[in-house]
Image (cartoon, rainbow, N blue to C red; front, side, top):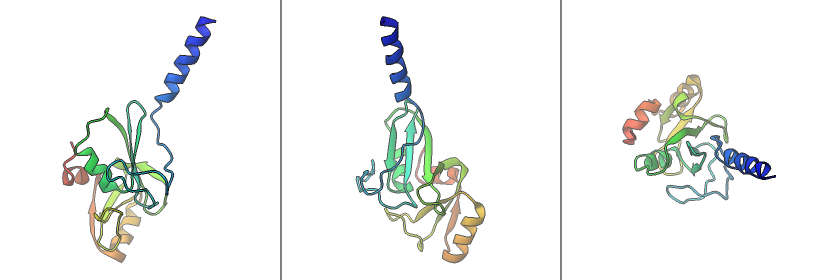
Length: 144
């Protein structure tokens, strides 16, 4: 009986530490950094720590600004929304970025993420702007 309880407790602890994205409840969840309600389905982002704790953001720039002063457990996942596929979180280091004044983001950095280079290039052609990589973003926002 005692072994059964220990096994159940162990499974609960293990399940609670799974490192995976957590669904964003648009219109209800608040941004960890700026505290605004997350409503923009094309710019939201998320960090998940090695312990499985998820932090949600209303914009990529909020996530980057928070990471610049990070004091939580080690981040394991960096996720951004693919601009062309709203509500779809993708790994931040696998996409390309665009800063364009003609594509506003919630906090004014005009920063969007694209899973395809073609999509980003089309957006640049239509809206202008500057292309960036994940490494470029980390330098721009002083994230180590």
